Structures are given as C-alpha cells and as structure tokens.
Image 1 (cartoon, rainbow, N blue to C red):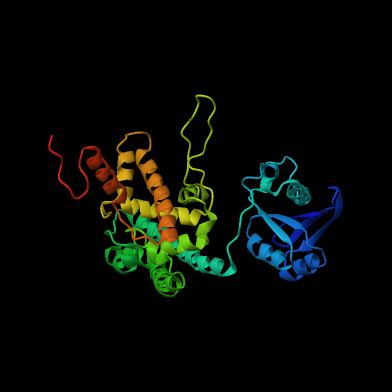
Image 2: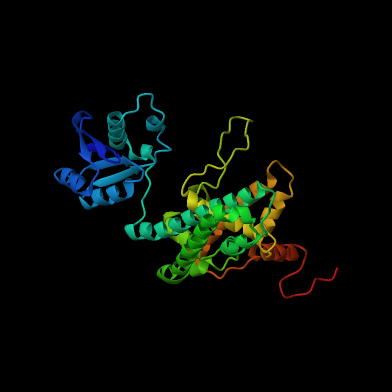
Length: 361
C-alpha cells in the first residue's frame, strides 16, 4: 500500500492505493494534529508521501510517530506535479501515492530537521525579518528627505535612529519621526536577538566555535550553518555541501554546447544569503589574506561577464565546503594552508626541501 497526502492550510487530500495500484480510498482530512493522528492512527504501517511545504515538518514528525514510513517530496524536482496540466488536490495526492509506490527516489525525498533545530532556526529567521524591515524603513526615510532636496549623513543602521533627527528638515520631522522611532525599537529588538544568539544559542551549539575561526563568519552564520546542515555525516564529501545549498551553476550541456548558467539556488535561501554576505566581507577591504580571498580575487580579475558576482558566489561555495570540513575534523583553521602547500611543493621540485638550503649546482 501507499498513501499520497496533499497538504492544505485547512484540509488535506488523501489517496490510498492498494497493493495492485488501484485506488482503495480517497477523502479529505482537516490539517490539525488531532484529526491527522486519528486518521492515520487507524491505518496499518505503510508508506506515506507528501510535498515539502509550510506544514510538512510537523506533519512528517506526527506521521513518523504513528509508525509510518514518511517520504517528503521535493516539490521543485517533481515536475510531474508542479507542471501538470490538470493540477488539483485530488490528482496531486494520487500522483504522490503512485510515485511513492513505484520508486521513492522519483520524489527526490528530503529530510526535515528536528523540532528543536527548527525552533532555534526560527529565532535566526525572526532576526533576519527585523533586519530587512529596518533596511526598508531606513531607505524610506532617506528617500523622503532626498525628495525635498535634503540629505542625511552616513551612519550605521544601528545608530541611524539617533542621528537622523538632527539632520532632518524641520518640516519633515512630524511626518518621519514616528518611522525613526520605529527604527529605534526594531534596532533594540535586533540587539536582543544578537545577545541570545551569541550567548545561550551558541552555548547549545559548541560546533560553532570551529566554524567561527574563519574571519568573516560570525555567530549568526555559524549557528545557521549548524542548524541547517544539522548532521555533517549526511554528506560523503565536503564539496557536496555546495550543491546542497544551491551554490553551483545549473547544467545544460549538449555536445559542444555548454553555456554558463546561473546557480541553482536550491536548498535553504537564508543560509545561502548569509554565506554570500560572509564572502563579501572576505573579499572586502577588511578581509584577511587567505586562500578564499586569493581564489575570489583571481576570478574577479579574469574580466569575464559579471566577474565580481561570480567571484562572490565562488567564495561562498568554497566557504561552505571549508566550514563543513572544519566541523567534521575539528582542525585548526589555517588561512593560507593551500598556498603554503603549493609553495612547499614548488621548492621541492626546484631542489629545495623544507628546512634545508638549495642544492648547489
């Protein structure tokens, strides 16, 4: 038997197939923990397929507790459902059941994180939402002042609410002052999140210490990396983390035709944005000399189309691989490890060994 479950906000569609692939039962069930537990609790252990979505994390955990084999399908990869010409809840549920019955790999199954990891990651996402809200409000104030011929002095986002009022034209203060006060309140909440992340959260995640050895990777990025990956052993090789986070280019090769395409942007977009931000810091004026920085600069200097953007993405991808490697091995980070190895190899090939003087000709 196999069951397809098409989740909805209020009701979910269920399709049950028997051992011969015939529809045994169809129906709707309310998308609540009580109703789902009641419906699936009366069914013998079987395979249940559902699409990834807002409700899939808690529903998959609930069905697992009921003893079922749960498969969470990657909706982006199942084009039979996403690009169907006849897309309804009933049809989607039956399609999920048939794919699960035939070969679960066709659903490109994903694995949800634990409830605790989801809760901790929710705090990071909440902070991110506040940061983006503050950016929107700051840009609104600056734009409003410019439209009247004024200009606010440069300041950090954290101190904007303190300095903006001083340079603001008098006739705009009564209009924009409530927005500036709101920016100050949002900044206060962001700092509270920062204290919680740097303190209790990082204490719960001691793995972040190894990741923060890389200059440009702060507590937020390190915590997000650990919470999203969760189990480093899920990857056979560290370089598999890049494709998992959507930092590798798409592929569309045919004979001699091999165009340069954009990255896939698969996986967690929040973590991908944080890694790109760290890459900007590494390539920026305050970044330390390292293999990552040299690799990015070499790509940026090639002069190809969008060379700087490609350099940032390439550094972000290599950074993800490096963080996974540091997590698994617990090694001490050496910024110029590969460069030193290369130099030692060149000296050996030139007749020089480490700690010795060159041979006389």
